[in-house]
Every structure is written in C-alpha cells, then in structure tokens.
Length: 125
Image (cartoon, one colour):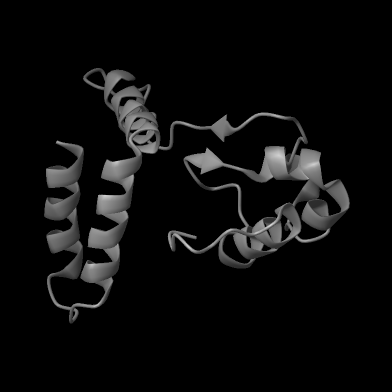
C-alpha cells in the first residue's frame, strides 16, 4: 500500500486490507469505515463481525492506555497520532519516508528494527 503506483478502487483496497489485517487490533482501525462502505465484503471476512460497527469514520484506539499507572498520561499516545496526521499532510515528507522504508526493507536483516526505529525518529523528528 505504500507503493506510489498502488491506486486501488474501494473493493480492492478492502480486499487487500483484509488480506493483510483482518483484525480490529490496530491503532487505526479502518474496519468500521470499510464496513460502512461495503458491509457484506467486510463482515463476511472478519472473525467477529458483531464487534465491527459500520460507520463513516476512522476508529483510532489508544493501544497502550495504562490508566492504572499513575505516571501514564494520554499525551504520549495523542502525540503519536499528531505525528501521523502531520506526516499524512506533508506529501514530500511522506514520499521521502516511504522511499526510506523501501530502502530499509531491501537491507539484510540483523539490527533491522533498531535501524528503522532510528530512521523513523529522523523523519518524524
């Protein structure tokens, strides 16, 4: 989906998304919006269709909410989402980070995840 040449219609986008991500366990859960656009396609392929509520909105969940931890605040999770929004709104930076991702994917394994974490920090600053 990061390939700049990837320009699917809604049906293919939903099929590709479900092939790679048939779960609600994501920070940005697109299943509600996709189920709103094509309920039969989505609800037939998810494990618990009763948990997907079709609606024309993205569903962002705070995956690391630690409300019982006295030092946890919502600020870190919110700031991650702000970074996503800023990156999405900055076409040249998004294209550059996408290119860097593909370059990283072509490198041998090893300290791959650490290297990408450092590269991401550079892009997200």
